[in-house]
Image (cartoon, rainbow, N blue to C red; front, side, top):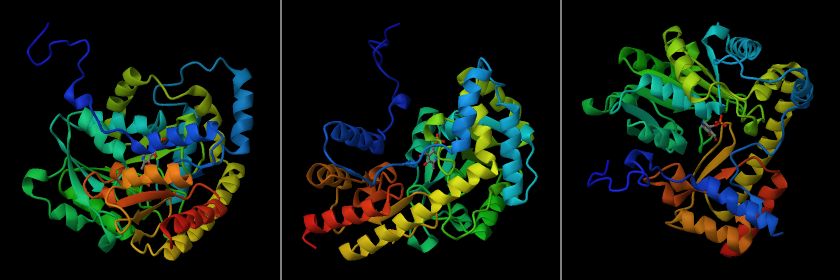
Length: 395
Ligand SMILES: Cc1ncc(COP(=O)(O)O)c(C=O)c1O
C-alpha cells in the first residue's frame, strides 16, 4: 500500500536499516584492488590475523569433508564443540561453565544479533564504550535500541568504569552494558577489579552485562578475567576469529544464563539454523594442546609488531595513544596531522601505500583525529610503514 511517507515501498529502505558503512572493510577492498593491480601496500588496517587456522584444525576439516554429509548441526551447536568451549572456559578462568549454557553462533557477530534481540525491547538503552567496535551500535540501531556512550580516555585506560555507569542520568539507565576487553580499537584490558565492580553495578541495577571476550588469549601481560568470574548473570561472547586465527570460518559463541538459552535457541533456529557445520566439527580441534601451542606462537609476533609500531610512533612524534595490553590494535591520536583521518587514510594509501583504519568507525564523535593500526602484520612492515610516513611528513 502506498503512503505519503513510503511512495514506493518496494524500493525504499526503512530508516532503522540505514547504518554507517564499516570504513575499515572499504579500506580492505581498496587494498585488495591495489594488490590485484600489482601496487604494493602495507596493511596496517586489518582486523584479522594474517595466519590461517592451526594445522590440527585443517587436518580435522579435511577428514570431516568426507566423513559425514555435514548437514545442519544442533541449532545451539555441535555438542562436542560446545563441550570443548565449556571445558576451555572453565579451565582458563577457574569457573564452572556447562556446555548447556554455550550457544554456538555464526561468528560472534551472529551472537550479538541473537543476544540483543533476546534482551532488548525497542527503545531500550545499551551502554557502550566509545571508542568501540562499530557493529554494536549499528546492530542496535537496526533493532530500534538506543545507545548511551561511555566515553573512555587515557584516565581510565580507554575502558569503561562502574563510576561512569553510576554517573549516568536516570533517563540513560541502561538495560544492558557492553564491554570489550581487550578492546577494539584500543587493545586495552579492563582491570579484573574494575570488571568486578561493573558486574556488581549491573546486578545491583538490573542491567545485563554483555562481555565481548573475542580477543581473550591475546594479552601482552595483564590478566584477562571473564565476566563470569564475577556474575553468573553476565553474557559472555567469544569467537574462533581472533586468538584462534579462524576468521572466515564463522564460528563464535555465547555463554548465557539458563533462562536465556531457550529464547536464544529459538531465535537462532529462525535466523541462522546453525553455524557452518564444517567449521564447527573442525573447530573442536582448535581447543587441543597442539593448536594452542601454534596459536600462542602468534602472540609473540604481535608483541614484536607492537614494539616496532611504538618505536615508529615515537620517531614520528605521535605520543598520544592507547598502549595495547593485548588484542590486535593500536589506537593513535593523529590530530596534530589531520582533522579528517578518513581523507588522510585515503591519501596515505594512494600516496605511500600504507593502509590505516580511520578513527570515525570506532568513535563517531571524536574519531576524526584518530586512526587504528593493526598488529597483524610483520614487524618489518610496521617499520617500513613508519619510514614511509616519516618521509611523507618530512620528519
Ligand atoms: C570487538 C569485536 N567484537 C566482535 C567482532 C566480530 O567478530 P566475529 O563475528 O568474526 O566473531 C569483532 C570483529 O572484528 C570485534 O573486533
